[in-house]
Image (tube, rainbow, N blue to C red; front, top):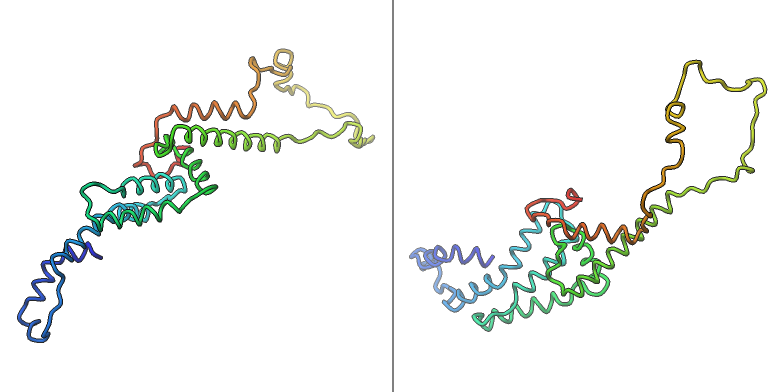
Length: 233
C-alpha cells in the first residue's frame, strides 16, 4: 500500500493543490516531507518480506523444505546496517525478534531434515558444520529405519510343512505335462538351478543409507529454477 502511494504521490499532490479541491475544502491535509521519507524507509525495510511473500504465493509446488532456508535468509537480509536510520533499525529488530520465536525445538529439526533431502538446499549453508553433520546423521538413521521397516514387511513367514493339509483326488490320477512341452528349467536347470550367492556381503540398512547419502551429497544441486524436488527424486 505504501509503495503504491509513493508511486502515485506526485499525482496526489497535484490533485490536492488544484483549484477545484481548494474551493470545496477549506483545509487540505497532506503528508510532510518527513512523512514521505519515513514511508520510503518502511517500504525499503519490508522489501525482503514482500519478495518472500510474492515468491511463496506464486509457488506451484510448495514444500516444507523451503521454510528453513527462507527463514534463515529473511533473518540475514533484515540485519541492521550502519546506513540504516533509527526507524529502520527498529523495524528490522522487531521482525527478527518475531522470527527468532518461530520453528523451535522439534519443529526446527524436522524443517532442517526436510531441507537436507531437498536437492536444492542440501548444502544447508545456514547451519554450522557441526549442526549439518548432526542433521545428516539423523536423516541417515531415519532412512535406515524406514528401509528396515520395508524389509520386515516383505518377509512373510513360511508355514510349517507338517501343518499343510494334503488333499488327494484319487480319480484324477497323476498330473501329466503335455508331450513336447518344456520349460526353461528343463534347458538350464543344471547350470542355473542353484541359488545364486552374491560375491559380496550384504550390507545392513544403515550402511546402505549412509552410502546413498554420500552419493546424494556429492551430486550436483538441483537448480532453483526447477519446480518440484519430487521430480528430481
